[in-house]
Length: 267
Length: 267
Image 1 (tube, each protein chain N blue to C red):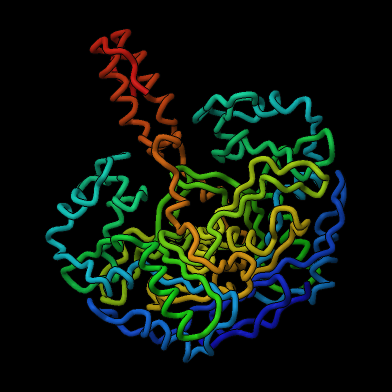
Image 2 (tube, rainbow over the protein chains, first blue to last red):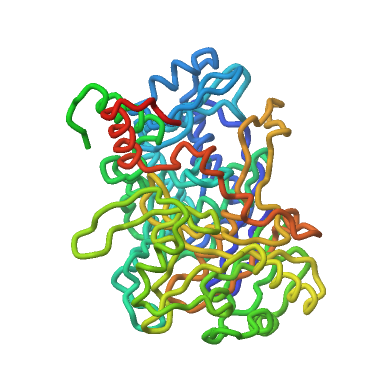
């Protein structure tokens, strides 16, 4: 897939160039991603490059034997958020991982990995994004942003969407709270999760089985910053501020135990 | 904004044509949206047209006096999911509404509405999407999909993203569970929420204050169906299947009360 003709002003073009080889531990991912982008026509000022966290994990050697999967999930668990028994399978565990992300199986990934292995997420996805950004900016000589994507479930909604777990050079949140609507009234509650919307848009061109872990979004230059910015960590809501920091069943059971034991209520 | 040149094969173009007038109750929204699309170059086979639920609500006359806002929220509440006190404001109420959606303030909207009014969501967003789809398909003579978008918060993540609350002619979920990854192993858990990713992508071109409630995504023809399909209702996870059907504090308090009263545990 070569670079599309840029869309009309204010429009976006989103595409996923083919050609990235299977990534192995120690590979120079920035060079390989850059080669794919160069073959597809290069980058222009304001482009956003999205890379799946999976290939970053592979390059960074975050690979374990699959036999260690349950141990890896336990090891990547900072806090259990919810669990559910599943017949004939290990229980579903939704947990907060060291990256602050609330994900099923702590984000430990067993699909699209070499046989007999599982992948851990990058240790510091924002740092990985910054490294990629610096290398691609140097190579192409343009201002660009990098987003690391992963696939995540949601409360209340069926299906998975891609979210941003790492970012560099992108305004990850667009805070409109100081602005006014078309009627001149304050937009009091609107803070848009730009980086997550970028990740979702790129999933649509990437596909899960198509082997295209790199995508480009052209037309979002207004969100591309000169410095690296706060990264995707700014999209993580701290547990103490979250109304869903613990699943319904676990919270109910904890309350029940406290009530039955005559302890004072907590939280 | 006129129609962009279509992107390379498998790529997307996303744009938001300007020119939709302020919508009033009783307006023929399909005609007005069609005029905007026609002025921007028309539609081609496989296009997805996204329209904010806000303009659909306005056309359908889902307008109330703002003084009735708290009453409207109570009226649109099927089930309280979580609440939080806020100094100097009415409490934040996250509830399930009649459309099945879990949203702050039940989705009752006070921004970008005429002064002194609030908007309720369309009664049946999937039906509204089907009506728009039929009218646009007849006018442009192409196979297309329609998505109704709204802006929603998430558990665990800062910022809001647009989601699909209505859909017609779109495969809203892409179930990859029967397919295999690049290593020939089953993709066991991947069901992609395509319609939500489409909604998120269109938010990036629409902007909150830009007054462009219509957007087009070109390049997703593989997800555009001949029939209307299940609609966005299929994206709603039933409460009984949801591990976060009740917020942490409410579930804890309910458990505590049951435990303290010596009642048997429920759920």
